[in-house]
Image 1: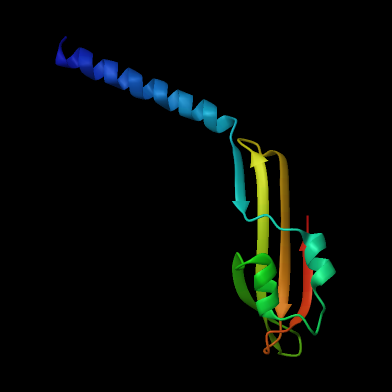
Image 2: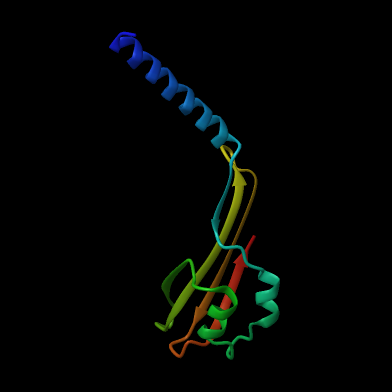
Length: 116
């Protein structure tokens, strides 16, 4: 077999593998973040009493953190938890939810909200 024939054969094999990969990816379920129960969180948390340590023990480390500055200048620490799941390529049946928890400078829950 000539070198050109071997090269074409390898290229054909790579192309077939690529097409198979795209086909499998088209049916793949993707997941982002770690799943959590908003209902379980809401049943445990008490504004003005629950601590950062308690929230971390229930939900683990936050997916992201930040600062919220209130209109009166007070700065609150914000933790965000998120979870998303769907099927590629159009995310058919996508399920998305996010929980945001805000703590005062003492690490006590001041506010929280979620969306699903």
